Length: 327
Image (cartoon, rainbow, N blue to C red; front, top):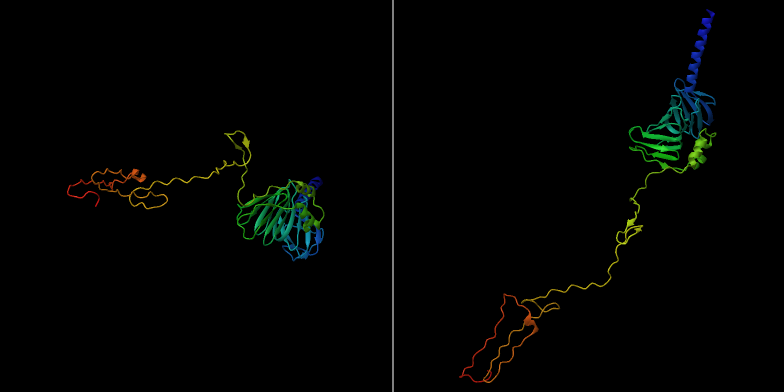
């Protein structure tokens, strides 16, 4: 009977231990406080936080101006809160609600990933370290690993962001801007969520990401630039690099075309016009005189239009009752 009672007690203790272990995985521990940090229990008034305070799923955290805090979960998921930040979580810190401010989230690899949500964007990660700043704009900086940012109102609009890249989402955006590269080393030297805390467990991964060549950014805007392909000269032979040159131009002076001849009555005098044909000369011959040769000009060889027939010379016979010689 005592053996049965002892076995039952051990079973109860084992179940209670498992429940406590499960609850401990769902809660975080405050590991650092800078200035004004308060805990916001759901069933009690806000109170100042102290180091090693336990923060459960029903408890929020709020930081004041120029204040910061760090929470560490059992699986070494780390959450760092910037100034003027309101933060709450569930599922062991894997689902985070960021109402305002800035947050650094480090999720270990092979730990199931996590998600952080603001009023405008949702960021899903698996084994990543990133910083999210939420205000009028939402800015995501991926330090190592990768993340996927989508819009709350338009979930089909998203961008995949790699280590060394950032996305800046303006207020009221309907599409997610493409990621751009940023100086990871400069951020590690200046950002307060890095410089005001101990080194991250993922520091080596961040250093490796900073030494990699920058990820390819978006294509430049403006007119398209096409590569110059080789031109094969089938006539002269050989391969020429660059655009094909036009053939040499003929610089010899061009002769103006000869104007057509102008004929017919109504053609006036001018540089390209033929002078009119002079009228025929009619002479009278006396007795004993010979007929003078007809007057000819070069213009008489030009054909005349059919509408104006050429005049014929009129000859009169000599009469005995007329005096000899011209009148």
